[in-house]
Amino acid sequence: MALITTSLNSGSNGNCYYVGNESEAVIIDAGLSCRETERRMQQLGLSMKKVKAIFISHEHSDHIKGVQVLSQKYDLPVHISSKTYKHSGLRIKKQLEYHLTEEAPVTVGRLSITAFTKFHDAADPYSFSITCDGVTVGVFTDIGKPCDKLISHFSLCHAAYLETNYDEAMLENGRYPVYLKNRIRGGNGHLSNNQALEIFKKHKPAFMTHLFPAHLSKDNNSPELVERLFNEHAGETKVIIASRYEPIPVFNISNNGQPGFINKIKVMQRKPEQLRMF
Image (tube, rainbow, N blue to C red; front, side, top):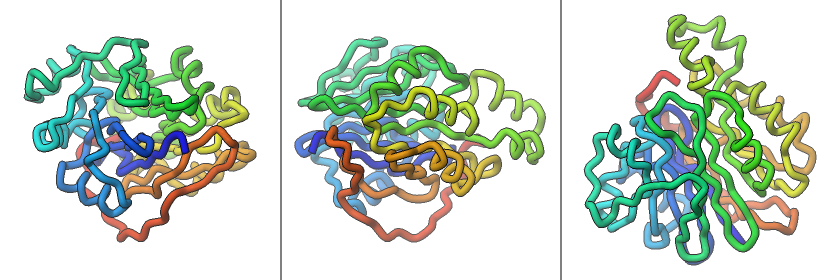
């Protein structure tokens, strides 16, 4: 086993992704409360004792809600860009605050975490690739438009959380005001299903075992639509929607070409309050 991963939640009501091995793990974004993060991890059989660091992509509330309490309670380092920290309003202990540098890998035990910039309406937003023993998991959400950096990192992933935020027709014909529609689709907002699908079709490596479409809009998308679109082109890659209401199972990501999960879970459908309109 090289890496295990799960999405504790993915959407405008909170984002939190777990990636680790048998000894250590990191959390990418902490957009759930500390209590809810703990509850969902316990539900999955995961231990906060293995979490060694938190990495923050940008300062929007659905990505940082639980950071302060988690960091303080578990004495966790927070890796965040200096601009993001400045705009976040967070107060992290100085000894636990680490500033990100683009394309400079951070070592956490046997894990190597690399940050790279992306297009999004935030101060200094980043995506992340996490590697261990030659296996890579990417967390690529809140992206306004594809770029060469995204494509380069995606093409190295054995598994990836890839934003599929909105269906273009649903957004156009939906209830959002024009200014918000334009913000979402304007190049610094979010990826559409079709934009993400093009990345998947053109740049999916042959060894990718899992794709996790992520950050789906409550109003402008549907999991069934996304599953159908991606499964038409998935081949041997397993497509699992990262839910905005509940955690997904914990998946084993390896380089032996065998998709698989570690444990199934039974959870009640819960619909947390939406914090942002994406």
